[in-house]
Length: 171
Image (tube, rainbow, N blue to C red; front, top):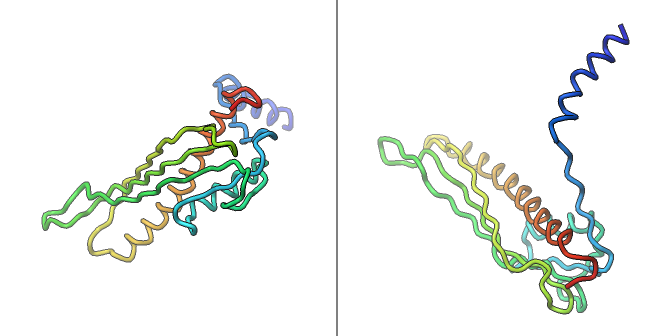
């Protein structure tokens, strides 16, 4: 019975081995990057806080926003927008597209750019019947939290790609 389970398990895992699926490697920052400050126009930005925590997990030494000689991840703008995409027979919006756009850049302490200014935009659609205003707000809040997590991951992937593409110690 144990041998049958083992063989069955191996047979089920065999297709995964050949499909090319690999887990992403975690972001590991180079040691020569130095202390890192995450700045945003909004001092209470949840995205900036999430990015700072993620960079610290990746090995960055946290620095104050006004610290001299620190590499800076600058969140230049964050914009949220609700766009109605479907209406009912009474002309009330039923379905919305929630859009989240962030512009950021990563600079070394000497001012050279590791990652030039760029924008990332995410969007999600959600249904919001006009009669259910309480449910609509809670669904939108859940989407906002999920999109903020997705935005953090997207920015980290871009930073990782830029740092992996540049030779060690290169500006």
